[in-house]
Image 1: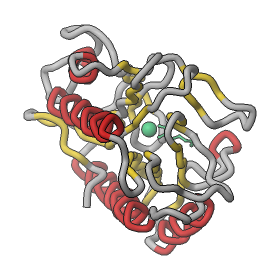
Image 2: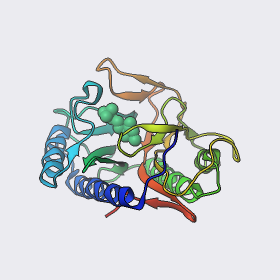
Image 3: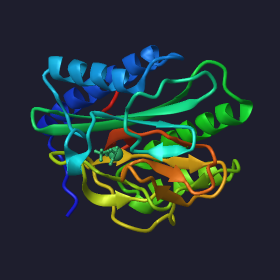
Length: 248
Ligand code: MF3
Ligand code: CO
């Protein structure tokens, strides 16, 4: 069952989402060449806890950190460590927070210093795909309209969408129904109603859309090592599109 949140619940999700947005903004400022990914994770955990939140990823199915940091051909679930950021990389920060019992979940991918034109274009299109999905998340549309909008935005500009990892409902749990593929048919699937809260998360690749998991059991990479990007927002369905809950 897909639940619809009350206005009081949405207000709590906005508060959780605001903390997520603050962390992402500050991580982007701190992401400079030479910085270790572990130090960014440690900073984020401290920040979340000082704001009265809990980092939802930490301990989730044994995940060892508070933030997922994925670089270049790494798509999602990269584990922070001793590795240092370098000029020319593209890096995603995926952050989840629980605040007063409700979840926020969002991701951005950014370039470190100067990046290639191809990488810039990939980031632009992935963010555009997220915006298209959010615009399609309005009451009266179906879930397939959201998936379709994301897919068309990506494929019409020459990118592929990952099949094996998807977005999700969110609320009292990080993962609620429904699953939200980044590909699909318009006018299909469950009807969207005001107050449904969804984590939309397009994942685009330059090459093959298939992925595999590294021996660390977490880091997801593209099978062909091609560049990939990921953007995510937690949104609430309204009459005129998704309201972004993970914003400042
Ligand atoms: N944003 C990711 C998701 O939607 C975060 C999960 S990472 C994990 O599933 F470490 F918590 F698994
Ligand atoms: Co998510």
